[in-house]
Length: 119
Image (cartoon, rainbow, N blue to C red; front, side, top):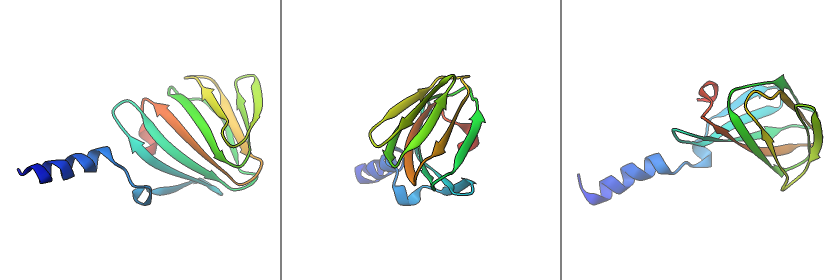
């Protein structure tokens, strides 16, 4: 295989284009896109319409998130916080958490290990 073909093959595994991310409607007004994934982590973008609520849930994944735009009320265990652009949060494995969009919002989350249910 030529060197140029090897580079192209590597780029297909190492670079992910936003336009190629499958948009999945998780709930009415909540769109998920898996932006990139590896063997140990997954990067996902969530677009919320105003008022969309993610019900309380738990999972075995470590989750950290970043609010890109909008405002979210996040509940992590017993703690509640309003998060806006530039704010981050952490949902440890097994901790109940939920959220509600206080306005149209975009959030980016990293999960480790990758969520098989999002693949």
